[in-house]
Image (cartoon, rainbow, N blue to C red):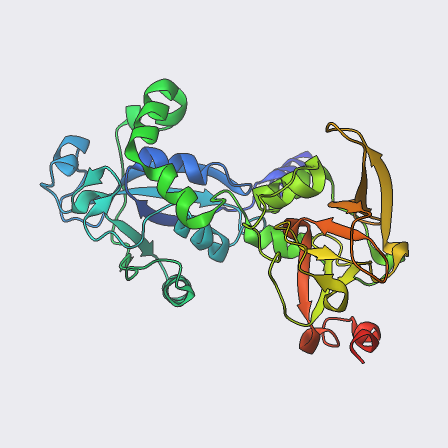
Amino acid sequence: MRTLLFLAALTLSAPVLAAEAYFAGGCFWCTESDFEELDGVSEAISGFAGGDEKNPSYEDVAHGRTGHTEVVKVIYDPAMVSYDNLLTWFWQHVDPTDPNGQFVDRGQQYRSAIFYQTEAEKTAALASRNTLEESGRFDKPVITETTELDAFYPAEDYHQDYYKTHSLKYKYYRYRSGRDQFLQEHWDDPKHRPWLTDQVTQRWQGADQFQRPSDEVLKKSLPKLVYQVTREDATERAFQNEYFDHKAEGIYVDVISGEPLFSSTDKYKSGTGWPSFTQPIDKAFVTLAEDNKLWATRTEVRSRYADSHLGHVFSDGPEPTGQRWCLNSAALRFVPKAEMEKQGYGEYLSLFE
């Protein structure tokens, strides 16, 4: 009986088998570091794949003598992060247009590649590559290889967790490589986890149905600027935001909760460089507070249920209200008029009659 109980306890406590995925993103120190940031990834192991020689040494691979490329084996929990999520993260941390290396590291041993193990992974990898290509994000073609994994060989021990064991050397190398500068230029926020954003940003279903995620969850899931504006009361740059000159018909909702805030029928060109409105759709969805952070007292505007910092309201607007509700685009999501019914905002279509 005791033996049975012991075996049962072992069974219950046994960890769920993790999945593995293989990516080449140039220097494996960097690729390993990037993947180990993800919740759901337990470990990333630096190594080699794609060549003919068994158990190659770093020295041979680095000098291009084996045909291998530097690869990272990603061990992850599919219940927390999917293979599609890993693909998204991979694209956000490489230059997929470089045919002969990555950033400062040149040669085929530093090429970008996705090594698939199953037909399902191959299909997902090709689909994600096509999506990236069609997005027009890059001026050059996406050339990252999609290759079947034959064998993976771990690199020498001193390469594992290099970003932790040699942090100063690693940070210096990474900065000088130009990797982060490239990623920032093309992705705005390479740390953004869009699959989490989809879980956080919501369609408004009423105050009784909404529960704002914690700041910890929001910080991980929202783009950096969106979090800074909505939760840290930052202000985005004038004339360099999504909606300051936006003219389409529709409504603007809170980026976190989806609560309806402003209508294009009340939007006007204020010349300030931020989206401006004469009034909210319904003042029940906004709260006002005195703001003394700068040299003059201002009136801050926040969404009532998500408690997002939206911007400020001033008394220098046009008729009929004389008000200028000056907002941050980053705190808003636009719902086109044609999509309002489908997205649950049909009751506000009367604003356009």
